[in-house]
Structure formats: structure tokens, C-alpha cells
Length: 368
Ligand code: GN1
Ligand code: MG
Image (cartoon, rainbow, N blue to C red; front, side, top):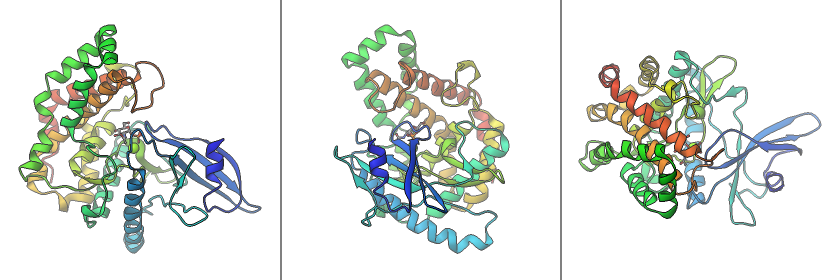
């Protein structure tokens, strides 16, 4: 198996015992490798970066190097006064000292350390868990707030630029496969109408950047609940994983993404649409956790756009899923036909729930 051959090229002592698919990422291929020596064992994560999604995987590795070097030093310097041991995965070098391996197909593979005795949950478990999601994201933003975003490369062009996703949806719906899928499914046509009615909302964050109301900073890009590691012993958040999308962007993309993910207890793959709702109590817990870490770098301009980002990011994700459904499922991995349409409908249900709770959500963001 290719992953096993690749895993052996990283600088880890011992012999490979197993390598198995790991986690539930929608884009990259992820494996957990176990190496053993006579007296020890090492587990680490091996990943193939999907070229179809990331046009320049070396840019991801460059960014990961910048972020981890910076954060590891800062975490160690602050460790003594911290209320927990904060962690962040580390790049495991290859046997010849590089940061990645390229296989015969030209795909980039990398190895990173596994955060031990901690778990990520695909769905929020309750208010304490939600608060930890907020703490972990705020802590990450604080850790990277003194990195000049210009040091980072663009790992994913157009990432979270909502009008761009709208344009992709427009192209997909007029493609032959898009037309076919729309004709065969009333749900897809309804979902398209849902987006049509909200077209005007899509440029809200990009317009704010153009008007100088928001500035680009270092962001995580994908702070969903499934990327937040929770310490099994203490229940506290210990780190945020999946640094593939760390690049210059808006903290609002992150705030919106964390909230759309962790305020929806039914999860992204909710079996029953009726169970999907935005839980304002969880929102309050996350926001309390986030502010405790990140209060000082949120300006008035940032605060003005908080509701906007909570409304926009699930709409955007729904648009991305729907566009992929209509384009023939080329971006997000699917587990059954229609999975992307289903995912889109879950996000749109969440958007409706956010619209219905607008004033309660705005009140939460008034907290200082
Ligand atoms: C993708 O592959 P994964 O699960 O880390 C996507 C995110 C979405 C997320 C939804 C590079 O993340 O933007 O929010 O699915 N990543 C990319 O689960 O597009
Ligand atoms: Mg990701």
C-alpha cells in the first residue's frame, strides 16, 4: 500500500506496524501510522494533500512551518503561566531532512505528530465543550496575532470569498451535469432558490474589507468543532489541528465557521433536517470562551460584523456543497450519492434558524 511506503520515509524510529485511514476530513486523505521499537511506540498522522483542491501544496507546508515554528516557541515561553498544556502538531521531517515527500503521481505527502490523549468530536457535546471551542479559537488567534500575514502564502486562492463561490454555483447550475441534477431533484431546485433569495448577503464581508472596515490577518480557515482537540483527562481544549487553510484572511471567517459548526448539535451530517437549529445558549458559551482569549484585538469595526459572519459562513458552506453537488462532486469527498446536496440543506436550515434568532444572537455579541 502506498501510504505504508510513504510512512517509512519519515524520520521515525522503529518499524511500521500498522497504517489505517483516520479521521473524517472532507478533502485530504489521512492515515494514522504506528511505529514500534523494542521499548517504545510512536503514532503519527500521514496525509496526502489533494491536488484537486490545493493547487500549490508546497504553500501549505510553507505556512505550516511558519505557524508551527512561531507558535511552538511562544507556547513554550508562556507555558509556566498557562492554565493548561497548550499543544500544536509538529511537522515530522523526512529521513533526508525535508518537510514532505512527493509520490510517483506527483502528490505531496506529509507527516505530523498526533496530539495524544485528546479527541476531536464531530458534533458539539454541550456548553462546556462549546466554551472550549471558543477558548481554543481565541487562543489560536492570539498566538498568531503577531505574525505578519504577508509572510504566509496563499494556500487556497479565493478561500472564504463568498462571491467567488456564488459564481461557481452559477456556472455549475448551467453545466450539463448541473442541469441533469436539478431536473431530477426538487430539493436541489429549492436549495438554489434559497440561495437566490440571499444573493445580496454574499459580498458583506468582502465589501467591508474594500471599505477598510476589516483588515486581513492570519486566520485558521477551518475551525470547525471536529478540528478542536479536547483533552480526555481534563475536558479542556488543548489545540486546534488541520492547519491547511491557515493564510491571510478574516478572523470573521473563523468566528462564523466555529459558530456554525459548534452551535449546531445535530452536526453537518444531521440525519433529520428538523433537528437542525442554531443553539443560542451554545453561542453564548463559545463567545464567552473566545472573548476571554481574544478580547483585546477585536475593534469596533470587527464587532459590527459579527452577526454578519455568523449568518454568512453557513450560507457560504451551503453554497459550496450545493455547487459541488451540481458540478458532479469533484471537491468534497462524498459517502453516498446526494451527500453534498444533503450537506447543503443542513447548512441552509441552519441559516434559517440564524435568521429567526437574529436579535438574540446580536445581544450575545454585545458582551464586552
Ligand atoms: C472541508 O477537509 P476538511 O474536513 O478539513 C473544507 C472546509 C469546510 C469543511 C466542512 C480545504 O474541511 O472549508 O468547512 O470541509 N476544507 C477545504 O466540513 O475546503
Ligand atoms: Mg480542513
